[in-house]
Image (tube, rainbow, N blue to C red; front, side, top):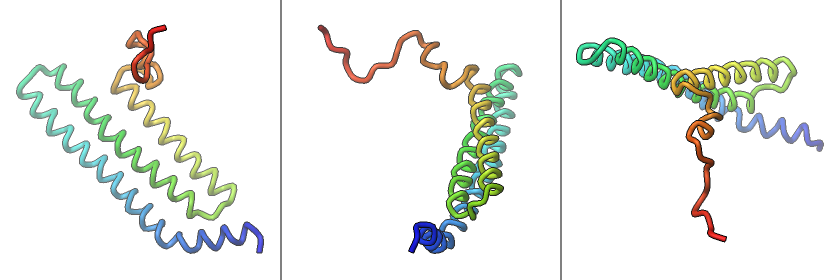
Length: 138
């Protein structure tokens, strides 16, 4: 028995479990985005009535971006599970890879928009390098 047939047999065993899980995660990701939009909009209306328009708008954009970002992360997880159960053809792998690449780019863009800087430049902006634990005296 060769490795390819063993892997194929294993994929056939776990596919019935993982396919509904991936579909459920996709629905959950979309739900998180929709709930994030609703919560951010309700907060925007509340802030608009109680504070200045400029501050309310900035908070609305940040909260809206956070909801979308969380939903995209869940959708990326669903895509990763889908790659496990999908038949491995160059077309399916390429398509799933492209979807993950696009969603990852959107995640980075949203995070940069929310924080005003790229994720990898946060430590440089703080001015001090990260250390783990106490620094010994020599």
